[in-house]
Amino acid sequence: METRSIRADGRTTTEVRRAIRESPESLLVLARRYGINPKTVAKWKKRDSTDDLPTGPRLGKPRRITADEEEFIVLFREHTQLPLDDCHYALQARIPHLTRSSLHRCLARHGISRLAKSFEGGEFADPPEAIPVGRLNIDRATILSRKGEHFLFSAIDEASRFAFVEMTRSTGPKGAASFFATLLKVVPFRIEHAITFDCDAFAEWGQAGSFTRLCHEHGIEHLRKPRPHPWAQDPVARLGRTIQDSVTVTSEAYLADLLREFLPVYNFRRRFKSLSGRTPFDFVCHAWQKEPSRFLRDPHHLIVGLETMPRPAMSGI
Image (tube, rainbow, N blue to C red; front, side, top):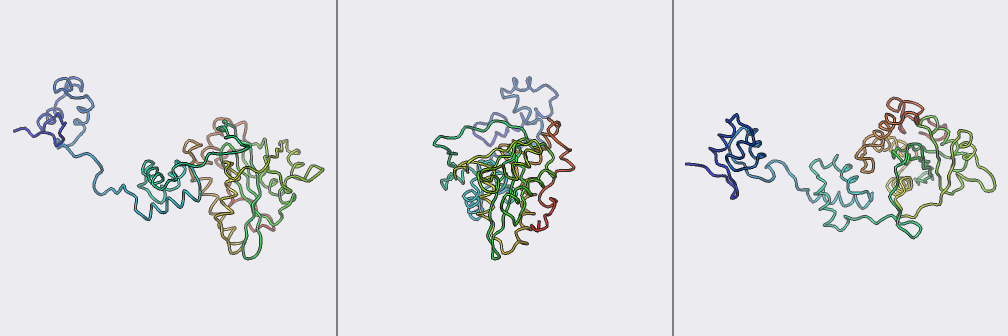
């Protein structure tokens, strides 16, 4: 007696599946003989058994996210405002069974599946064009603690998203120039443009500031721009907001330790959709292989994060 498939639309029996596994004939010949698709023939030739297994998720492999995981996902999305793929890359470390589709359904249930579009100057911003490494966006942020204010200078390469951060006690032009001088020693690629916001740290009224003079000495063009709209997807502004909004410190030493842990994870482990799923470090290494003329040294050996940046005498980093 023949054993039919457990599915109503199944077209093979146990005897047919056994004959397919034992036959030396081609897939096309067997498909024509039994009136089935060649892919079905190939599937049964690879199977170790002729049993028709049920479809759907396998037992013992949890696929649904729990209530606690869903709450964590919602808080992460609302706080970081990252795109769907970036959220998926970041959350996979904590929720390994999270898929892109289940993440999207979770965000849709809570009405946060769509981010506000970038809005600047009254018009929607156009998608950014592909740019080479060497365009650094530089900004200054302020962190409050029980012992007063702490100032952070940050620089992000527009192409690779690679970030450099340094804590200083001088927030004016001298602090900005000191940070940029340190940056010139550790960045492995040639800096072509230094883009800053209009503030007293990067521009002195009526004369070229120390930051601008340092740029000119190294053949770097200093560009100034107005501070972006809060909804604009500016990478350096977003990093500054992330640091200021999410970091609560009790002392300068605690802030220094926290930043040493944050920067390596951001630069070497976080994947971005805009970088085709690569980390900033992977993107820099790819750019080195593609255009080595833009680099001063091999980034595989000499690129550094915050934990190895030279420590200014007053900064504690």
